[in-house]
View 1 (cartoon, one colour):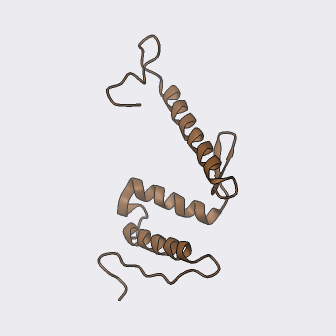
View 2 (cartoon, one colour):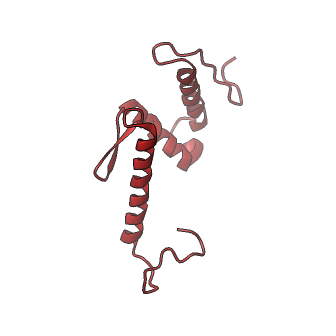
View 3 (cartoon, one colour):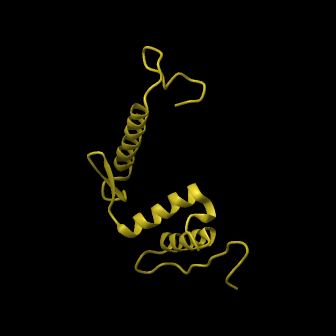
Length: 119
């Protein structure tokens, strides 16, 4: 829905219900997931679509993905009692090491956020 547009109006000019809006969002998410699965290939994409459910194929990936979703919403306070920014740096260092190397032999990693916590 675009601000200032009449996308959320029905044919009669009445606003859509919350259920109708949520159904539209769900359809958009599922269509996007289908497009990504086709683009990446079913084996390469980390999620699988089962009906109207998007399931992770890897529980470790799902945990990291959920953390990043929470971090995008709540910022540094995403994990109570922990510094979300520093956790994000650790996730990024791990991801870069595995991208530049591989799971069996990751590249050496170095966390370089500010302020530097490791010499």
